[in-house]
Image (tube, rainbow, N blue to C red):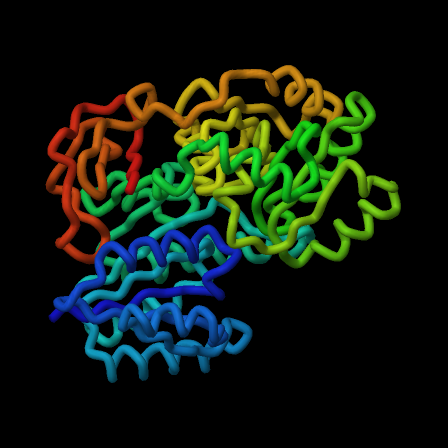
Length: 398
């Protein structure tokens, strides 16, 4: 039996990375695999969900207490005697788990990068964290991991030393979504618009944590510009986060309650996307945003920041626009793209996708379908039998 340790989960609700990890667990869990997940706080709903799958959830101290965090990691790994340790991280100073696994002689240590910057409003904090990140990616990440995965090349550049990027241990594995969950349905669209009492409105959607990274304050600026140009517009901001209260205050101060609706954390994002007319994501940085993939699969036109990896564009429905442009410019781009024939994304038209008849398909970063490029931690995945050469980086769909 393979024993796998996976880090890190938050609460299984709001994070795209949580959803990514939980999807992986759903696919690889069987009688020949024992999985434990790491978290800084035990969420009862998440624990109940994992218990049903026979997956353990282990609590460890936060990185506010680095020594305690490291010692707890070592104790867990020594007790668990894991064959594989997988760490999905956004910044290298969250790599003490890799060091602990290395010291405990775990044979396969996988690090998976899903971001490309420091999420803080403070320039000083960003500078200090970036400095520490650069040191630790060379001292720990590059030395302790055995396999290096990234959702996009830019996320790989952020997380790994240059010698790793040119090695055979480096793999680009783009984020994946469950296509069937986001397939467009006119019935669901009309039902959801009635529930939201927005039947006759133009709905612009944005999904993500309220944070510096997601540029939430700029979304409010865009909503204000949109409402000024067309009062029928409504921006749905879905998610929570450290900036939620500040964004809520900004909406009320500007009297934009009829232009912006803060939806909070939702479990029906796939259905809310059916109700939308267009999706926006003016992020300051990303690895490869899962929500933008989900939006495209659901048939939405998508306008995203030009700072987001170009691998995000699955088709011509995805447009890039600089966040240096004004909110008025964004509003004009949105309003000029709201009328189109809505249907689910045809994967045969996808620039980065090859056909897939089973669970996954891989198109590797060397521009060919490579069966030798195994998933990051378990060789039991099914591969696409119809894999064909690709023109760009990898895309996995399940």
